Image (cartoon, rainbow, N blue to C red; front, side, top):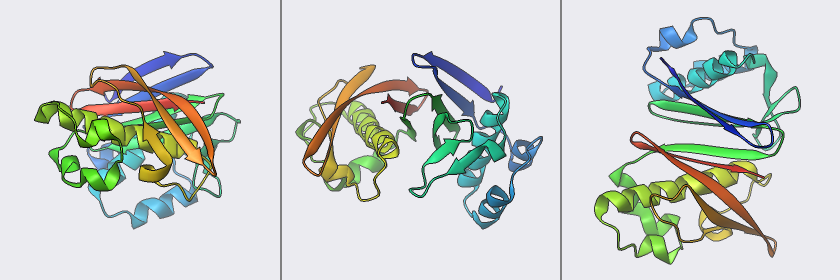
Length: 209
């Protein structure tokens, strides 16, 4: 069943996941897209992107929201018209959303060896750059680290944020269910707890402010 999992959390917060195993035509069924979303969809070229976009809307439908309940602020951050906060992510076979009374960020990433090729361009953290983990664990660790930074980026209402310079992650183990990361902007540092999960060949990271 495409509706894959629901994670219930404090502060009226829930995470929802959809496993994308349908064709585009199947994902479109029962979906009523507003004009903005229809125009966005027409411009999309990647099949994965199209499926992820539609799967997010199917998730919204599953929990009694519609596409018209979703809008974006001037920073491109998604919001819900009822005042709830929402964050969105999709990667290949999975789409996910997190909805909360609090500010939130979420990211899901497929584990891939490719991430190791540009590791020094993406990270400053020594425990990532000089990991003693075996190759498979190093891929998981680095993919988690990228997802952590993506989730935090979605939380922060700033456009000019460098993943490498402004967001730092404290060392964590690949089997950890949480970690601490810091965001430093204009000499102000804020620490966040990031929640971590492994789902099949994917990593999931989410943060609740």
